[in-house]
Length: 132
Ligand SMILES: [Zn+2]
Image (cartoon, rainbow, N blue to C red):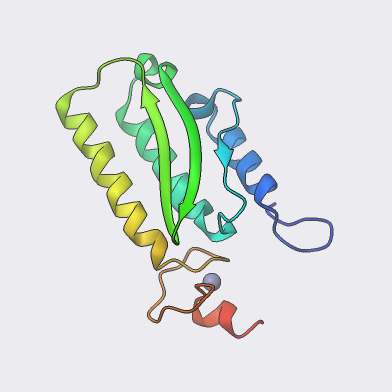
């Protein structure tokens, strides 16, 4: 699903899949995504959306504005706002997950999102390192 006709994964396809898989989070609106977002971060983004869907109610999700998904120095940066006020506990849970994903993204394979033991540039797991 994340692969183009040429057999290569495409960022636009990955974002489209994400937006379509999480209608309550995105409501059909596409966040801006920096072109350097590795396809492997789909796993992390998907997990974040699942967390939002699990802990936020309909009203809270409807007030969510997902602006940007960025890659800053190899780290996933999520830029979003809730227009309503979240409970302290929910806000902290989301904040903690954003922080964890930011750190994890630095060590996640750029193709599949699996955690790597050794950092390479680009970041690749043992399986994908052997393919190129
Ligand atoms: Zn991999």
